[in-house]
Amino acid sequence: MSTSSTSWSACLMTAVLVGLGLTAGVRPAYAQQRDPNHPAPLDTISVEAYQGWKQFELNCARCHGEYGVGTSFAPALIVSLKDGGTIPTKELFIQTVCAGRPEKGMPAWCSLGLEMDKIQNIYAYLKGRADGKIHAGRPGVKAGPEPGKSSS
Ligand code: HEC
Image (cartoon, rainbow, N blue to C red; front, side, top):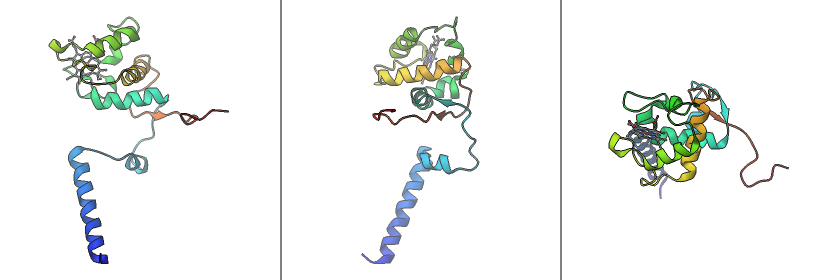
C-alpha cells in the first residue's frame, strides 16, 4: 500500500469517527480529561456511587433531570430519597425501579434488563445526593486500590 493511500484511509477513518461522535453525542473519556475548560469534579465519591452516577445519567436523567433534580415530567429523586421522603429505604427504591410504574410513565427497569448491581449503584449515588453529601455536577472517583488487588 502506498503512503498516500494509507494517509487517505487514516483521514477517512478520522472523519468517520468524528461523524459518529457527533451524531451519537459521544465524548471519549480522554477528551473530558484533556479539556482545559472542563471544571474539576466537585465531589470525590466511591466507585459504586460514581458508576451509579454514570448509569443514572445514561438511563434516568432524561426524565428525572441531570443529577436527579427532577423535570416537569418526573419527580426529583434527590427529594424522594430523603429521610421521610416517598422512597425512604433502599428496598423500596430497588422495588420501585425494578417494577416501575408503567401506567404512570416510569419504566420497569428489571424487564428492560438493567442489572441489580447497576440499580444499587444508582441508589448509592442518589442517596448521597439526597443526603447532601454529593452536590450537583460531575463527580470524581475516589482513588483507591485497584479492584482485585490487595490494599496491603
Ligand atoms: C421515561 C421517563 C422515565 C425514566 C427514563 C425513568 N423514570 Fe423514574 N419515574 C418516571 C415517572 C413519570 C415517575 C413518577 C411516577 C408516578 O407518578 O408515580 C417516576 C418515578 C420514579 C421513582 C419513584 C419516585 C417517588 O417519589 O415516588 C423512582 C425511585 C424512580 N422513578 C427511579 C428511576 C430510576 C432509578 C431511573 C433510571 C434507571 C428512572 N426512574 C428512569 C419516569 C421515568
